[in-house]
Image (cartoon, rainbow, N blue to C red):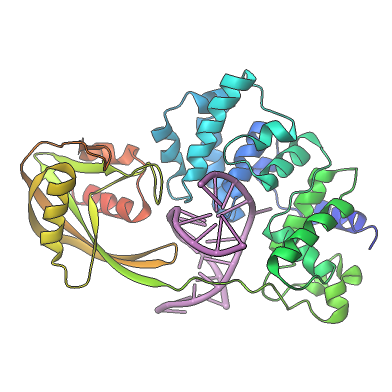
Length: 350
DNA sequence: AACGCGTGGCC
DNA sequence: TGGCCAAGCGT
């Protein structure tokens, strides 16, 4: 296999999408885009990237902003550890590198949230370093190009070697992006568009008729769950709780909620939960809303009750931070998607 | 090594 | 309509 760089880069020059992070060579901006793009589709990232850059135009700006505000800009994008790591990394760039974005592999790789892929992507795209950037697209494209089959781990390792071999000295960043762009637009998981693929003539899977074979993704079984949340009023304020930084929705604010087990009486469980975790006494009132949301491999039926504070001050425990908030404050807090739905409901009824 | 970690669009 | 999926990383 020789010379895929030529036709691939020619195709890329002609068909690449006009994306905001392709209009800069600032390593900081490339880095932010790459972190946002982890496990997230391009179309979804564009708006977040532009708002994030307007708010945090430099690594110093990001570093000096409170994490809560950074998370608010990340709300809805998911995988919130990315935002926490991005923020922590920005502070380390300022504190340990004098605000100069690191341009060596080891220094970049040492930042939280920067793995092998991201380090290679940032340095090849922003600095022209001849490093591969192997993401799921590249694995699929090269596995097909070289007709690599077998164990997923084995294919991955083999792809990593091939990615280094096919990488051209000229325009390594564009080459990496071209492989990913091809994987996203043409060499897609389902039925690849071999008829319009610039590499169709040299693709070994195509030659062998294996192009429809794609590494089977092992899907986790979907679990059904139920939970109850309370919008607890004390006068004109509502009770909000901050989720612990580790785990799902870490660092985000939510209306206090608790999982239900089969047979649980939701209103009773909610009351006991608030008493036990925050020492807050409540009276559980009418059901405000009920809906299902999906998160990871779970489908959750959420019932939300309007509640009234009847006694007890918030006693912060190991469960984390909680406080009373004015309705107008909710807009500025980072909340999980289903809780944002509830907050919007409250805002609409006022 | 295998698993946890979000979200909404798609067919 | 619901199962699948997307420019990974940390542990």
